[in-house]
Length: 167
Length: 294
Picture 1 (cartoon, rainbow over the protein chains, first blue to last red):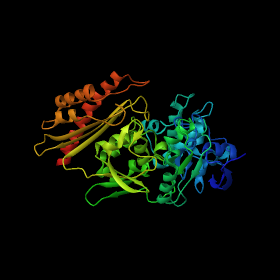
Picture 2: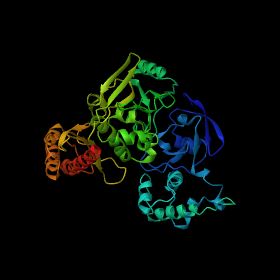
Picture 3: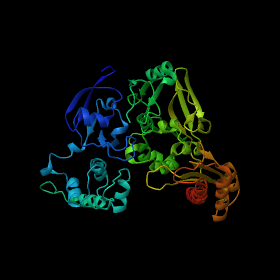
Picture 4: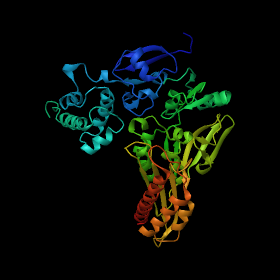
């Protein structure tokens, strides 16, 4: 394999990963193939569908529109990093489950990675605001109604997180 | 849908980036936000032999007031920052109003002001805003810097005056005169889609409340931002009301734009949208100008 590989170090869901990659390797493919984190999905490879959305330095971005080499020295969070497992789901994941906000699940990681920072910045959205917030993520299965309900439920649950003792 | 192999550098000075561009010429492309370039590379529509990544070059991402004389932006300023910055809201409300229409927040987290201008997609918002606001663009190369007025910068579809060796580094907006109001409106089928039609309007009123000067610039109405000076001059010297706004917008829609049509809108539908959006935007800009004068 010839090529102009680079050594990069990318922090993904906590640990730093050293890798040797071609410049043309997309961040989405790096996560899926080099790191085995297949929760990030590839739908369109031109930034429209949102299935590849991850957090880059805390902000939601299209991983299909970045090269892995650009992530050298940066912090990436994927859907695998949201919770430790099914017994410890984030309230947003639990709300998606409760409200049947996924069927095939292909779009779901992109929605979750878009919504996590959104709910931190907008803890009390209206249904209309939620619809606008998810406009960059396409779903072919659900028709979005249950997704909106899940987000509203999650916002409510996150509101009710118990206060630290003494509060 | 993966790009073919290419060489890649991520210089940490502007000088290195410019020297690399000078040596490679049209074999190289600059990588700014990548939200238009990388899709084109993924489709293999564009296949640069060398990618010069600008994301590690310092001092290209800033928003600065220029004494009392307007605002200066670094070309690598992210669109999301333009959307949220209070200086933009205060000094360039037309820009603040237009940016949320650019695609989606995930795109705006990476997309840049300079990248969008250099890409010159006729369906994009920032070139229209730059023309409407009389932006001056600073272009750098190993030969030095030069300033280009926005109106001259855009030469056609995806075409600007930039040579392959040149880098857009700064955008300067002049200060808004008193009694000026602006409005940006866009119509698309879904939130975040490319606009079927859009318009930026600026209105300046005289002391009596009549229109002193106006400007209308249309989006996706030709092969670049389309200025409608005849419609603007129809408003000049008159009171702006439903009737004068309708007349000016109708004239622009019928005579001054050349929409090309696309899968989702025929040219005649685009003209219809231009007339409706134009009329609404003229009225809103005039109201805002009146409010600004108090």
